[in-house]
Length: 285
Image (cartoon, rainbow, N blue to C red; front, side):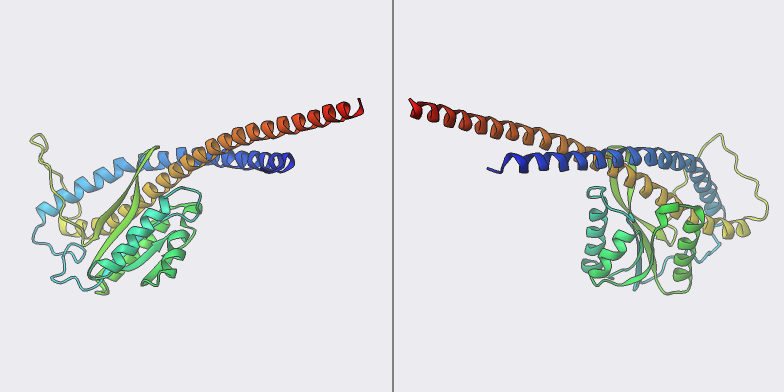
């Protein structure tokens, strides 16, 4: 059994770790609130741009935009992998990295990866998979211009014929206690089912529909990337808050256990000293 001094040192160090995890939990909660606000404020625009795009796609069926046209044969794929720049968020990064590694080794054709986030980029590079490009420290100061840069790069790959399909793999924010991993097709833009409304007579477009569709589709792709980044950012902070909460609780349980052990060691030491005193007194009689 360790000495009383060693146990007390462990209690002190555990209390220090508990203070750190509690502070990290508080910071993650504040950041989560901000990330949720940005995510929720983006959803009305996302719904409206999807609605307009659906109506345009139906009314311009003869228009062949390059981002809408699927390739006859998928020879080269690109997979956008979104992870965090930092750790301490449970299995948030590990699940996405594991799925990306599986996709790159077990599916055909094997995708070339475009990594967003330091954790995914560093780990996947060690896996010796094909990395087309990476974007580091995106979430330190997340702005729409970063989503535009990523979207423009992916659209250039597709339009230029370097890839025949683009998918995105990320963690979607459901609630504070639930984040789910999602893989969606990004390019070509998948068919959008139109829900007919008998009370809706249609839009009046200016400029003409084909020109508007040509501008709206790239904007749709850029905003989809922006939504993915917002979803991943909110899910990351939620996962970090829960992980730090669990770490704080575990530290508290460990402190209680160590305190109980220290009390037992202290009691045993006192009992041993009393027995020595009693034994010495008996020897003097």
